[in-house]
Image (cartoon, rainbow, N blue to C red):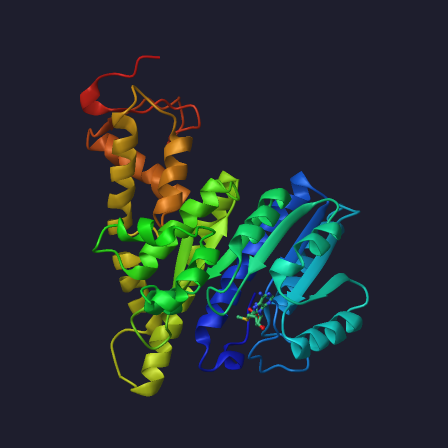
Length: 386
Ligand SMILES: C[S@@+](CC[C@H](N)C(=O)[O-])C[C@H]1O[C@@H](n2cnc3c(N)ncnc32)[C@H](O)[C@@H]1O
C-alpha cells in the first residue's frame, strides 16, 4: 500500500488512483474472502502497461499492485486458518505490444491464475466471463478517455453482479462534451444514443463533466449494474481542477461505507502530496508543515467537513419529512452515496441534530449512538408513532 511516488513523476494523479484502488481492493477482499465467497476475481479491463517507469517489475502498474494486494490478503487469511481461498486475474489490453508484456509478466508469475486477453475489452467480455465460473468479481475499468461501448460492458457487469471501479476522465470529457464530432462516441459511452437531449435539459450551471457523470450514473442505474455509485475526484497535480473521478459501483452498503473510509485516507495523502509538489517548486519557510495545512484544508472540503455535514443534514431532513419515522440505515446510504461523509460522522451528526432539537429519538440504555433499529423522526413533526 506504500507505493513509490518517485515512479509517478508528472503523472502523480496515477499514484493517487493506485492508492485508492489498492486500499479499496484490500478492504473488499478481506470482506469477501472472510464471509461471502472463497473466490475473488479481479478483472483489469484496460490493463496497460501504460506509461510505467518500472519496466522490470511493473510496480507502478495497476495489475501488479492488484496481484500484490490480493495475494497479501489471501496469505494473511491463510495464516489465520482460512484455507482454500482462490484469487483469479483477467487482464485485457488492446495494444499488441502491451499485451506481449502482459503475457511475459503472467508467465513469470506462474503460481497465479492469470488470463491475458488481447483486443478491446468490449470484444472479450464473453471470453472473460467464461474464465470466471464462480466467485466474486471486481472489475477495474481505466480507459484513457471515454471511448468505451458501455452498452456491452454494462451487460457484463450486471451478469457478474460484483463490484467495479471506473475511472471517469473528467478533464477530457469536460473539454469535449460540446463538440458534435464526438456525439456518437459519447452516445456509446452513456449507452444512450439520445443523450444530447437529456444533456440539454440539465441545469445550465452544471459543468459538462458534472452533466456527463450524472447521465452515466443514470444509465448505470437503469442497466442495474449497481445500487450505489459514489465517486472521488482526483485533481490535476499542480492545478486546481479535477483530472479524473474514481466511480465505484456496488450493491453493498458496506462497500459504500468502505469507499468513504478509503477516501478519507487517500484525500489526505493527495493534499499533502500536492502541497509538497508546490513547495518543491517555490519553497516557502512557513509556520505550518504540509501535514498541518492539509488538515486545515480538509476541514474546509474533506470527507466529513462542515459543508459535507450540512449537505448530509439536508438529506436526513428531506428523508424524514416524507416519513413519520425512519431507521438510520437507508438515510445513511443516501447520504454516503451523494456526499463525502463516513458512517461515524453521520452517527455524530444525528446526535448533534438531536441536541439541537432538529430530530428526535430515544437511545437504549448504555448506548451513545443511534442503533440500526433506532426510530428517528423530525422534531417538529411530533413523536414517533411506532
Ligand atoms: C490508462 S491506461 C491503463 C493504466 C492501468 N490501468 C494502470 O493503472 O496502470 C489505458 C489502457 O487501455 C488500453 N485500451 C484502450 N482502449 C481499450 C479497450 N477498448 N479495451 C482494452 N484496452 C484498451 C490502452 O492501450 C492503455 O494501455
